[in-house]
Structures are given as C-alpha cells and as structure tokens.
Length: 566
Image (cartoon, rainbow, N blue to C red; front, side, top):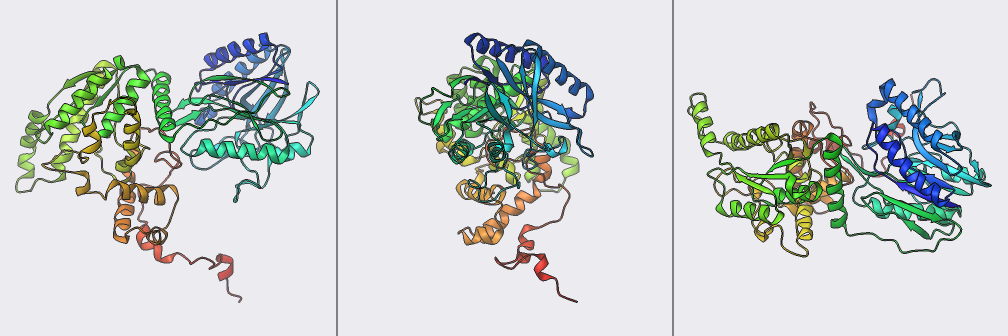
C-alpha cells in the first residue's frame, strides 16, 4: 500500500484555506498514484478549536468543508480529521472524528475513543468517546484508524495508564492489518524521544505497521512539531517527517527500507519551536511587525533573535528605554545586538518621564521612603511607551520575561509584562543561557557580555537578580521539581535542597498567580507551562509549606483504610 502523509499546518477556522492546501497535496498524491492520503487530527477545523465548537455555524462550515473534500476525492482515498455529530445520549453531541473519502463520497467514519482531559487538553468538555471502533476495509486490507490519544495508552509501555482500554490492541484483535493514527500532538521537551519509543514499542508488540501523521504549526500557546513517523511490523522506522515545518511523506509499506531516527539537540528543538510558534502567532492573528524593549540583557536579546528569524529583521523594532540606573554597557550591548541582527533600533530615555511621575506623586508619598514602587514605576513607563509604539505602527509588542521570573513574580504588571505574546515565558533562565550560546554557535550574534554579566533589572543602583532570588541554577531546579514534577516539600528537601530556600520559592510561586493570570499567552515548550495547562485559583489561602505536615508517609494506605468499624 502506497501512502502520502500530509504533515500540514492548518489555521483554526480557516476552512477555505485548510481545504485548499489539503487538495493541493491530495492532487499531487493522486497524480503519483498513491492509494491513500492521510491528513492530521481535526485538520478541517484546525486543532484545538476549543469553544468554537459551541458555535453551530462553525460546525456547519466544518461539515461543508468535509463535503467539499469528499466531492474532490477520486480513486485515491483521503483520510482526514473533522468534527462529527455523536449519537450518544446523554452526551456532548459531538465527536472528534476521521473520515475516509473516496470516489466522491464518505466511505467510512471513525470516532476517537480516548479523550484527553489533562494539562492543555480538554476534549471531554466537547466530545463523546467512540462506543466502538471496528477496522475499515480498504483495498483488500483492514485499516485500524485511531486518533491521537488512542495510541498513547499501551499497558506494556506506560507504567501508569490514564484509561482502561488500548484501542490499537483492540483493533488488531478485531483483524486490523495496518494501524493509522491521525494526530495533533503538541510538542514539548522530551516529547520527541518518548513518542518515538512509544510508537516503536507498539509496532513491535502488535506486529503491525504503525502510521503516525501529525499536525505541524503554532496555535496560540501550543506548538505542533509534525515529525510524523512510520514503522514497519518489526518496529523499524521506515519514514520520518521533518520537525517544525510542513512535509510530505511518501511511503510504500511493502517496499520501504529501515532508516535511522534523527533527533536534533534540545537547544535546536526549543529554538525551532519558539520560532515556529512566534511566526504562526503573528501570521494567524494578522500581524506582520513586532516591537520589543532591548535592555541589553540576555532575555531581550534572545527574544529579539527569535523575532528576527520568525518575522524577518525588517519587521522587528528594538527600543532601548534607559533610566539613570541603566549601565552604559547595557546600552552598548543592545545597540550591538540590533546591528548584528539588522533590526531597527532606537533609544527613548525615560528619565524625564520618571522624574515627572515622581514629582506628581510626591505630595501623596510625602515622608515615605522610596522602595519597589519607584522601581515598578520605571517598568510601567517603559510598558506605556512600548504600547504607544505598538498602537501607532500596528506592531505587536513582545514581552521578554522568562519562566523563572514569571514563576516567582519577578516581573511588573502593566510594565515589562505588557505585550501580546510572551515568547520565552516557558523557557527557564538556565535554558535561556543555553539557547543564547546555541545562537552564537557559529558566530557571535548575542554580545558575550550579555552571557557573562550578572543579570539585573537595573531599576536601582548596583542591583542584581540575586539580591531577590536564589541563583538561577537553584531556582530552576526547584521549579522543575515543584511545578513540573509536582514534588512535595519533603521530597525536595530530601533531594538536597535547602529547606528555607524551598519554602521561599514555593511561597513566591503561590503568591504570583494573579500576575500570571494577566500575562499574555506564552509558547509552551516544557512539560508543564504556566497558562491553560496549570489552573490554580488566584483567590485561595492554601499554603503548601504548612500543609506538608499532613502528608501521609508511603504505605499509609487510602481513606478506606482509615474507616473504623462501628
């Protein structure tokens, strides 16, 4: 069987554009005589459509787009994801579905069985699970059609599973000869290797070819890497799509040769994800130009590099907004970075505005010492001026804060948090340094001083970040343990972290939720990002430090073990 995997980049709700692009690829495949063209999960609507699924006109447009694709299908079949109606009652009334189109009609429809409802996924909010999913007869073979999560629950791969059923195994038991998975699987660090190992393990276990076609592109905070994969019945890789770009995979299941798996470095993948996510956010939201503040620090330098690559240097405007506390070296670093990138660069001093604001507030602040209020005032003046340029020139303002700062609230509402996209808000500070060195791997683009000088907000004399925060190596390790892995206080202390430092960081994280709730969307590149995948109340009085004393020791049993007989 000859396949063409259409690893494409749909735009949510752009039914005409999505259909047009898929038909271009389909006609190319049909002209080459392939048997089946495969498109990603919910390709017709774009993924994830979220609450657009509550709009009946959106659903009607989705159905009309599928009918257009079906009418264009000839003897070469097309397998594509769309939103179907569900007959389950009671229920949501919708299904995440795949349609097999051939000879002008819909030949078969299959629904997704496992609906992820965790982290960034919320499919149980919209869809009903498939009550059954039998194989589909196609050209004398039996296809086992699965959709994304359906293939992520094999009991022999995962030590802990989210669901009871294993759809691919059920399909093979029902006679499926080829397993085809339509996916919109977002990327984050570690996903590439895990996905490869999981699919390879499944192919070996079930002794069936596994075809995985994944969406590519950025949609809001999610970045999809593509990197589609095909394994033969022995679990050998026989086709691999490019990562973070559209690609067409031509596969002959009967005549394919094994190949080596290609996994770029972590820095290369994070860079590619951020560039793609930024480019698509601008393109799909209708923006062309970006503006950002260039402080001379490493965070704004990295953000500027990403923006220049994503949008073109001619579409990026960097602004230095020095106060009396800005060092000459930082100004020089910002200017040199802009020159090397070829972006527009201007200097707009804020000292006169700052002094005017202080004078205006002086009667109300009489007798009070200067403190963080005046520091934040400088950040808010910068945010005001940057937003003015954004409005006047139709540019989208990029924030430049990293994950470490956002986690502990080391940022200013309506100041450096102003903007339409938080490019590196899921990149820990230590990874910022790694990415900067990766950017400079062939020639120095980010000035060396940005990597070597102590990081500072430069809002008061001789200020450094470590006046307020633990060293970033320590802070990032605690964030990884607490936010990403969900470790308890005692587990972190047992792992070697200082208890006082852990308590300080955890409480800073808890207190800063109100800031993060007001931050612009940020591109997700780690397992757990701040945003839609981490839903913590703003108004609460839970203190993990105090609550740690209630934790049961290992082996203490469940609540059922505590019930005393009457």
